[in-house]
Length: 623
Image (tube, rainbow, N blue to C red; front, side):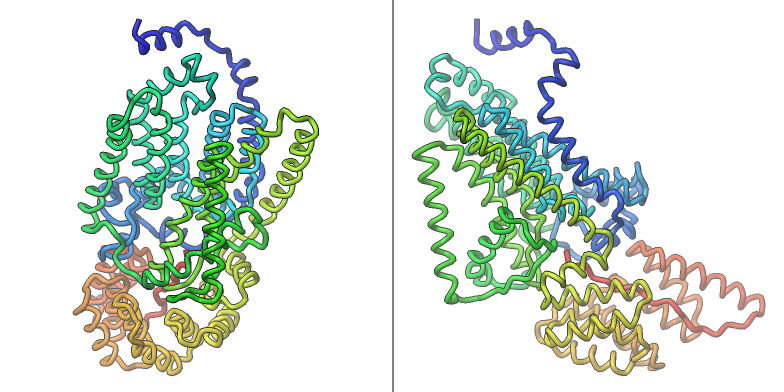
């Protein structure tokens, strides 16, 4: 009988497990999942913060199924601008649409969804550790550490980071698909035929299923591309005893190559590019800053102390005194891992690869963003590698009684410590003020975070506290463009229009100002000129922006304000309606309704002062 038919018959003849038997067999992964839910349940009481507002609360595209084609066929931030964006994440966008359909804008529901994603990831981590080690105790230890890991708070407790969870689940599912049946590397397994029969199954749909999971991760977040360095390697090892030479290479490369090519083709069709659109720093900054940032990430992963979600890390475009020792440390660590993998067990190499490789896109992020920061959420998937390392160590010592007791005590202490830290750290994700206050507490010189904290105060009407933060940020980073913009906003809110005008005009002289930031600054300056009564100057500024991009966010809002000040109500109404059409800003629709009411009042012979009161919000997210 052919092997495939025999295996199928064996599966059909196997007795079905009852629900009680299944619960008994899966009690350890279920317990780990329960822990994951419990330690993160405090997040259910957190609200929206950071990018949650432009990405969810004020994003009409994720609030109606009529926008599904746009979600699938445009960049992640298309609701804010028609300009080409950096990111294409349709699975993440559709996920947000599904959540809004089910739970509306109730923060607890969105946080519940992220917690459940973390629970699913915990289950996958347990199964991977079990199949790689063959030891339930080791798998339970690894999954428990993963479930309670404090470094995960940024990914789990911040709703907009659910793309990190989605891509990580896809990556873990792709791995698990390759490891079913388990990755066996002992002579005994090879002799009894288990390895050959198991790896034979990869010649069928299993390898393609893994590739499809990998593709889903790409459409959830671009950093899923890092798994292209891990998944084919696992498949290559799995097939080594049943397929030879070039045929094995073809079997492994073809599914992942097809999926990758398909993703790049779709991304090109939608974004008209494969790489990101803009770069704030050079590749020299990336190369010479990478060792220090990588070591920083590894330190946070294994010693998750003094966490803040985001951190500032100095960048350098040339080798510094610390560069060579840091690079040597990275190279030495890689050599030790390689020696352990060759000398003792290859799974140590897999654990190390899962720790380091998914971090690498996080290093490249410094090329995209102007602010020099690192984020805890980038360590979500790498922590699965750390959990596998824990599982391997526990499995290694489990047969030795003294070492077994020591392992139980150590893992228990780490688990309890992590659980307490995780529960405590979630309080910083209650709202923007709590989050940015924590960032500044950990990074007292983070001027950008101070500016964002000032924005949060300003949105609550606490102008004095906001201006205090803006001025502090300006003293720390007087040449930072965004800090200057924050200060101008604070001065404007405080009614200090002349001072705001001076700051904005100085900002426009900066040669480093990007086109988008320049246009945004011109709009703010136009806002200031309107407040000063210089309507002609405001009109000239708006014409500059319109000449560059007549669909720039808030351009038509400002035109509406100007027309309203000039008493041109029909034109103001048209501009507000145009703003709503472009951005979906509810304030624009409300203002349009208000102006329409004024037009009707004027027609009825009532008086009108023509003084607009509301100003557009220009809060800018850090993350």
